[in-house]
Length: 124
Image 1 (cartoon, rainbow, N blue to C red):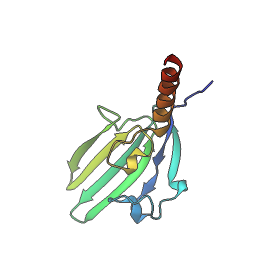
Image 2: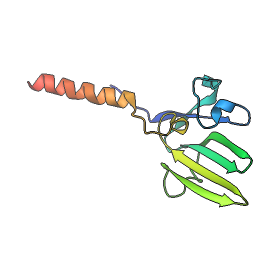
Image 3: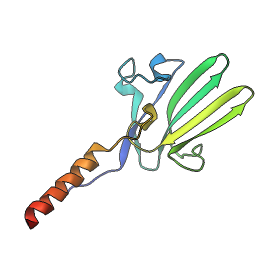
């Protein structure tokens, strides 16, 4: 019996402490496995970018209740206040707060393809 558990990882880092955490994100630089945490389903990964005339900073964290993910757990929202533009992006897939494109979940793709192959082989 195969059981699929819906867990994934999120990056947790701050550009003030690790420059590779800022945009453009560099997962192969000083980002380590300690900067990745396992999170359960229903939890959102979050990337927050603060931008002002003086520069910008990115923070990548786990948002357990997805309270700041207004409207959707997969998308971005931007707000400007007191000359600071804050962009909050939330997502719910593996290490999604470190990339800007949608990633496939390799295990699910593999299991789906294997199952289809087994059925096709048995029926033909």
